[in-house]
Length: 619
Ligand SMILES: *[C@@H]1O[C@H](CO)[C@@H](O)[C@H](O)[C@H]1NC(C)=O
Ligand SMILES: *[C@@H]1O[C@H](CO)[C@@H](O)[C@H](O)[C@H]1NC(C)=O
Image (cartoon, rainbow, N blue to C red; front, side):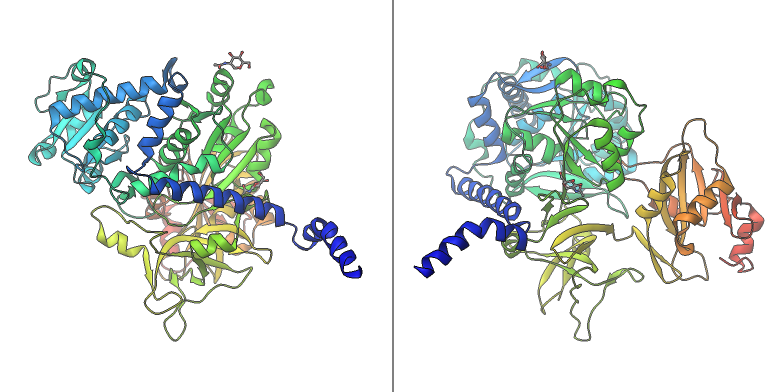
């Protein structure tokens, strides 16, 4: 009887006990069950015969909901069925004219427009992997990217004709067939393709065409810019595309959702998360040529958008637009992305209303990811036993000065303790493969780390510094390279940038470290853009910086740009700025140096510059 009573009370108490002893128990449990559901779905799909790929999910949806709008673009709406038929036309035309065979890679050079999606689907139906060329690149980098994927066919949008002409001789030398999605083009060597597509039948392509495609076959190539060198083509295979189906779903997107896709489709966020994710849920995509801060909310209102994506600086851009009365009139309920800083996120919510922010951590080529499922401010995720068993990862101690992991006397890496920042590495396994970069062994090898926790093991080096706290929350700290060391201290560039943008007059700031001969480490420098009508004030800036930052973290040099340059994914460009340094002979922007004695930033000139180089002026 006594025992029963104990059992009874303990059962009744369990939720309470759990809540106090393990405050995140239910959240962990829900996450775990979601995770398991997704895993089960994935495994079941992978067992299907014939093989079930991301394309098959699209075909499934277009049979189930033929009339549901799939793509809305510039006042045109294409249903799931329309999209299926359009892609059939392109596939049939390609089959007739190009002699493409299963497995032949094709490069697609096109902006965000429905034809991008139709063409990708068409090529998927033919079993051909597609390399998504960034439509902003030209000449040498265009050729470099094209050559990465060994394609013999290039499909380009009409408005990119001039860019194609520029590299035409090299392409012709390589015997590349070029199809331009246009009705006219006078240049010999470029075939116009619109008529062929219009005249082609919209009959479905036989499935047997892609019977040779396996989960290991490359599905698409996505170029990653990385911090150094030319872009690399990350291989996304069919298996990975199938996994990508789950992303939006796992973050709470539903069939009735309207997803706003304004990020480039040639990148992971736009393609894998926005497009592929919407196929899984059967959502509608509002497609835009590119991100526009001023149009953003008008579009959301006009199309009843419910899900938006953000990366890098996007939230800041939105917060920087002039305030409007209808800022909170919209139906957006979910914002999915990564790279938002805590203050911006707060400002965003204050201004645009109660939107769930789902921050996640992942990279195009990486083999581990985290989702912020607990709602803990600032955390990107949480250590989870099962997740970690399936995707073994570790945070290892990292030397930011020498830019390499710290190793113990036996040559193995050292795990960072709780609360300590470490480099995220994740074990390369069948379940968590690292597929590397097309035709770039060297860069692929550079991302691999051996002898990490045991002799002979192999890990993927994410290049990201993370921290796990005592409650098992995971925090993003920095990208390797986004910290620099100065006077023996680590300086986090994002932190300094945040301080600078706290000033009313500053629109944006990009912070980085530059080397000075004869000095260890790097000295801080900032490129800032002022708000409209604001001028740079050296002494005000000094007193602001001095009141927020320790001496070593204060940017020693500041250059004023009309706008802070960003990459196509809205990440700030640093490499060029670092190279240009603080030499007034090279930097044409107004350039200032911090003068401790004068309590101000003063104009930089050649004399000061040589005095620094000669070591006369001490930094
Ligand atoms: C958006 O929603 C409103 C109200 O629910 C509806 O009247 C309108 O037709 C919708 N607009 C679109 C483009 O679906
Ligand atoms: C995690 O999600 C919660 C709730 O949606 C949010 O408050 C928090 O800021 C998020 N963390 C990050 C880093 O976005």
